[in-house]
Image 1 (cartoon, rainbow, N blue to C red):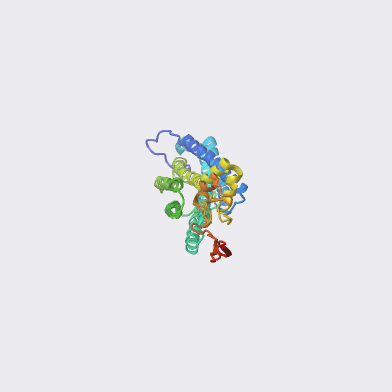
Image 2 (image 1 turned 90 degrees about the vertical axis):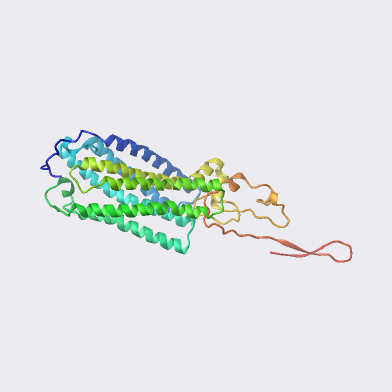
Length: 366
């Protein structure tokens, strides 16, 4: 970042990508706050808060912090403009804040994917899936926090990163290539975290319309993956004009990160809708299936209504013979453990003696 770097000839036009960064990011931050608040409120009201919810709450806070840093960068230090049109102290201060924004990005991206993995384990927690997602989460910590370690260790002192003098730094390629590797692993986890829920949902006995809606919401993760590719393409080994280059990269980074958070929250949108649509009845159906077993995934489960030999199929669902309520029969999302329902039937044993007095009830079988 030394001031002795000669400007290009001719100079690039005095463009400003900063307002676009703030406009796009501001809209997405508002959606993050709304969807996260609704998710946490409904989960808390249902007594179903879990590790995935606590993690997504931390992610939302870190997203707001990253956006706040970017607001200061754009409004006070000219982020989004070419460095040749900025005062040297503005360029230095902007790069210092950009360093903090990068740390926040890697930490937030890691925790977002971890939250999605934890949610998947609440939907279906079998041994193989748990092992697979544990390995996936370990890779997320290694790659993302590895980049943070490189950012911390790249220059001695750290301030050399944004001042450009007074110390020594590693070759820039170490940091850039580590970011490339992290992005590649992030893209892989984007695809896995987007497609794995679809596989789980598709094998569950729920209405086709519900499957399609959940798949559509989780498919937003694939869109975020595309922005991750754009983020990788926007980076380069040339670091002489960071206020312009990293602002463009920040737009793609925020689209990837913020849309990922929104998609993770919208995956629970049906349970949020049912909570507000059916109130306490919707709340009760979130907690238990028709067999009375508690559910902790926070999804509203498909009720499994069974009938006994002495109950007409048309009245199955309640002990009084009434049809099941809408909130229990039509509010399904993703069951915690699909296909596991207790089925109990009673059959009365009857004997018909020849004395002409009718049947004698001798007992029952379960």
